[in-house]
Picture: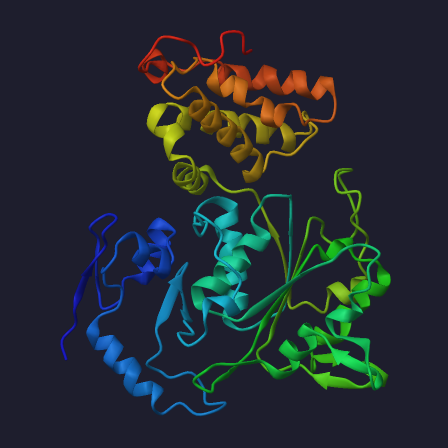
Length: 406
């Protein structure tokens, strides 16, 4: 049977048999989102659909994935796509997500992908907003890997993730938690395949000593086990991926900005197969995301993109050089751009003020810890965002957005 050419409705790019890789990599769209946007468009050729139907007939319980299974290439690494796992069993794909390819974060991502390829356990740390949890959400969604996320809350008992004591009319009994069932039994698809889960533990560096100890057995390099009730333990289902994220490298707060982080036992940290730092996103990746998130802003004010590129660089350089006490993550950048776009919406047909970005920067600047930092941030921001060109600020009507808004 011959191959079939499929055309992307977003940009006209053509692929043979399977288009989902391209729309995810180039446009950050899931198959469902693309199909909703372009009703009736094909992502998979009839040839592959027929091969899938044939392979499904021969899949039995605990059978390995069919060699005919679809695959997804991420940063040059091939991953099977579990076509029989529903979206509801995976972590959701973040809005407008793009897999970082440039700069240091692009390298960080590639190292993490290599570990995921071989089902290694991972501890990922980095500054707030460096995309740690978002990356694993996206990987689960794109590869259809069944996954569970749990977040550590200091002072709470996480033993219930594994088991807890419950009661009914007949008395008390041990009730198994969702994490125990997932790591012990895996995920059973409708077609009968048994697949390993990914467990994502967010903010592990917020854990106290007792909470952190629950990670010790399941990350054992000889044979992962799960603590059960009454002193019992169970084997972790082969291939299960244990991932933990945090803002620190495990030694506690080094910068005075993550004061709720606790030191983690070095012997526990070494049980993770790999420990990687995630850095802030390179502008080449970040600009594509913000263009997708704030289309009205950049349609009305095209120069805002280049202005925010310069502003982002000087702010982050100042932070890394310890000249500015604060953080400027992707979330912080989005807070400024979101406020700018909201002001345009409120203004409707009124003239866009030349100081739009300068006014919008308050959404981040005002959150800095003291006036000295706020003044310094404004000083280094102003050369980049103080005014927009006249062409960006003209529109129907002559009234300013807010006459006395400074």
